[in-house]
Every structure is written in C-alpha cells, then in structure tokens.
Length: 117
Length: 112
Image (cartoon, rainbow over the protein chains, first blue to last red):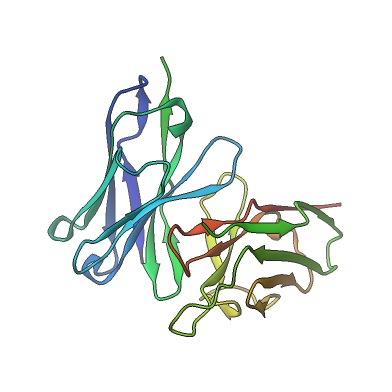
C-alpha cells in the first residue's frame, strides 16, 4: 500500500524557516516524480512544486520560487520541502503527493504550517 | 499560467440524482505529445484530495463507475450518475499539461 507521511509542520514567525519531510513507503520512490501541494485554511489547492525522479530537476510555483527548495533522498525514501523567508500567506496544510504518468495519484494526510508572530 | 475555472462553485443535489461539474481552461490542455493532462480530484471534509479521473476520462483504481469524465481542448466535464451521501465534498479539476500545474477553484457538492 502506498503511504506518504508528512512531518515538520508547526508555528513559525514571519521571516523564519521550516523543513517539511515526506516519508514514502509501499512503492519505489526512485521511479516517481514527487509533488508538494498546499491548501490555505478554507481555500483551494495550490501546486507548490515538484521534483523529477532521475535528474532531480525541479519546478516551482512563482509564489515560492527563490524561497522554497524541494529535495529528495531516494535511499531514505524521503522528499523534503525547505521553506525560507516564510510569510503569513504561506500558512497552509502542505501535502506531499506522488505523480504517475498523467496524474497525481496518492496524497499524504498533510502537515499544517502556521506563519504568525 | 493556465487558469482553470469551474462551474458551478456550489451544487446542491438530491440523493440518487445526477450531478455535473464543468471545468474550462484558459488555453488548450493538449500536450505536444498528444495527451491531455486534465484530472479530477475529490476532497471529502477533513480529508486529503483523492484522484478520481485522469487524462480526461480514465477512472482511477477503485473509483466507482458512477463517476465519469469527458471533454477535449479547453472544456471538460465530470459527471456523477447517481449521487450518494459519500460523494459530498469539494471537486477540483487540475491541469498537468504545462508548468505551473494549476487547479480549478473547486466545486462544493452537498446534499439538498
């Protein structure tokens, strides 16, 4: 069974940093692009970025480019989201999600990040 | 960026009756490889999103056959043939044809 478990969320002050982790199990992480998607409280879904499985090429949303960095460690079956220079508008539940050809098919339960003083 | 719009934004439906959600993209979702990367996701209250349909009309594993997708180019539709109580939630269309990947605003399906 595919499982994605996010961790690392919490309360952080504006301008601060946080690193989210996504532990993957039940599939070969090396074979999949991986995504981060976020959802502000009561709002819709926003794609944050993803990381390719072979070259680790990354793509980011304009709203986070230059502040967030996605990385992966296939040996540890993990994907990461390093978030710097956090703003109030980054407050959201952050989901880790797996990509298959043509779709995002598996999602974690999410981890809440709150940016507030 | 490709903008995704959905109508309606709210859909009160009667149990056992059909429901339909429309999704429109600001430009064609046909990829240079010929595929159209339009998906539908369901998000039940308090749950993460769940994939229902991918590449317009392919039902994902375990998804009941009362869910179907159709469309082409810039106009797409998700249909629920007979709404059940467990279908309550928010439905999103999503495009993966071009970066940044983008979502529609969501359509809330609730029971009358």
